[in-house]
Amino acid sequence: MKDAENFQKWAKSVVLFSHITSRVDGEKYPNLLSEKGGRGFPYCVFLDEEGNVLAKHEGPRTVEGFTKTANSVKSFLELKEKAASGDEGAKFDYLLARIELGHLSADDAKKECDGLKLTKVQSAKIEKALTNLMISDTIKGVRSKEAAVAAGKKFASLLAEEVTPADPNSNEWLSFMAYTMLYAEETGDPGLFEDAYGRFKEKHGQNRRYAKFLEKAEKRLEDLKGSDEDDPNDK
Amino acid sequence: MKLFGPLLVLVLSSTAWAQSNEEKLAKKLKEPWLVEGGWVTDYDKAREEAKKSGKLIFAYFSRSYAY
Image (spheres, each protein chain N blue to C red):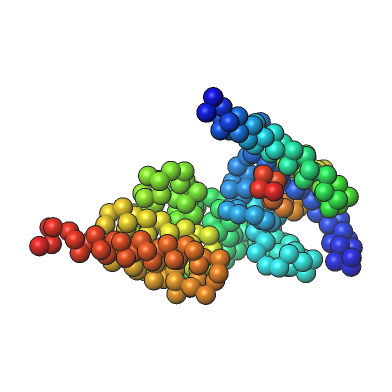
């Protein structure tokens, strides 16, 4: 009861918006979840008046948690003001924050980088953020098996260079490995499959949520190795 | 005649499926936390309110079709 009261007090500082994906004909914004960076339910974000994502809430769904995320929004908006006033350091931090929040496409981000004098460390951070953006955009674009395989092909190249999404608990990381496995399966590459599967198992093998997925993946790997051994071209 | 039973089940279940998503949404929209909590369920209205009040939008995404 206290939690509900505290939430109502906190909620006076924001506009509470509940989007319900209903799959009813004529649903007004059926893809709003994915447009705002969500991949599953429930999902909480802070938006500005235009609907731009200012912060994704990833902590506990408590007033304390929401307040912390709301404060990060304030920091972002302060950064925006500092960047607008000409602060070079703030300009870089603001650009990086916008890339990470998905406000900019990779092309627009690169154009803005051209206007900044970046140190090697800053360039590396931007490069990493742009790679994550590319990964995220690729995943969002997957609507068919063909697209998933194509995504896996891209990710396989990144994996070979040890480039993966930073957070192994993120949907990006999970999809990255899953699509790489799919590509490996489609192209008959047990080595690649085992690499992606091994990484997935290492990070999430103890999580019951992924038990069935890993069990099936192990079977897929066995089948892949089996068919690889049977390849007449190897004889 | 042999096909009638399974066909009937198919028609009834597909009809029920189309109706049940709407019913599920209607049920969800009546939940106390939504009705009494001051939540806006229209994205356009939420943005309008944010513009008028100068407040951030706290967006909570859920679904009704999986009930």
